[in-house]
Image (tube, rainbow, N blue to C red; front, side, top):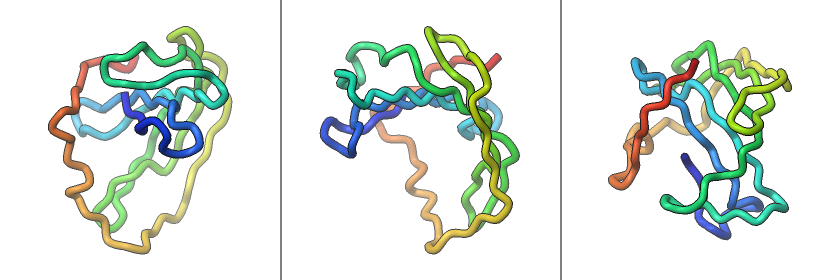
Length: 120
């Protein structure tokens, strides 16, 4: 689960559940839980996030200037822990960055936890 500290951004209670590919370590999918207008304060040991949002599956990765990124995603409704109806998809055909990517930004924080949860 990734989130912002309270007071950061317009919806600091938004939560992202990241599903990592065990072979590549890349983000294969996320559940994006919108909390705007709903009381929820995320903390490492706090309550679970609301059980609704969007499930995004990322595909077709390319490496550009040292950073590997997906070029396509498919989004599905997410309710009560279950993937639901197809919502949307998007893709890109050209990617470029203004500044070189610093791989140090991908180093996992010392207090990060990784919990195995396979994507079916």
